[in-house]
Image 1 (tube, rainbow, N blue to C red):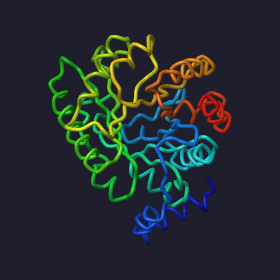
Image 2: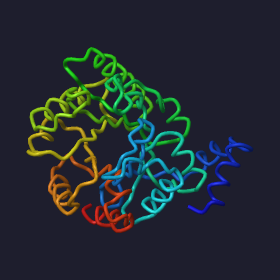
Image 3: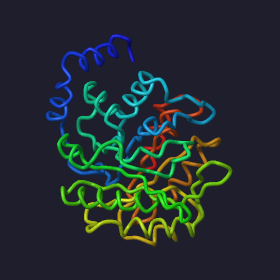
Image 4: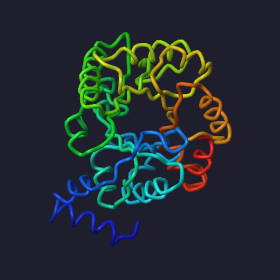
Length: 291
């Protein structure tokens, strides 16, 4: 990202902030959340708003906003990429850069459970709400649903997600729910990635809200994926997770999971934006070929 381009973004925010709304209004909308091949490939970039800046062995990888925007623009311009997921600060920058035309745009909604905080499981809604997503002409809202049976803050998270699902379904906008069974151990929150836990998480997430016509799931690739995905008839997208030591193994696991009928694509962030060899273009193209 040239320094001049970043300066233009800042100058626009200072002198003409309404330009963001104008850019959103003229954005070319996608025909469908899936591309011409019936698959979605969405680049995720909502991690910084939860203080999760680490990628692979780089603890502050996502801390440089110009670098992140540069990587995003490279990824979003590649054939096969159909959308982006982010918080308002990132999506507004991308609007000003003219990088969102024809793409599915998903606003991230609950970012209050900061990574590593004592209140991490309090996943309250601090980013987009359904009204703002609709006003911007975006195509969906994503929420994190972490369920800890031993933490009573889970109840408010479930209730908040249910309200968001209701509002998004009423607006006929995609409600993307990312569910996990979670536990706190050794001072940190851990997601249970066993097949049994994911079956339970998918079952709970599928029943959230008073409508499901526009609800999608965002799920990790775990062992026994056929069993996990058999728990719901909702369309699902695979999340990428942490940067893998051996990306070829990850790609094979994604490819196998994409054969499951309810799996309609990928939502991947750090694995493609910050690959071990830093070749964003190659990583994105490799993932796109899986679709």
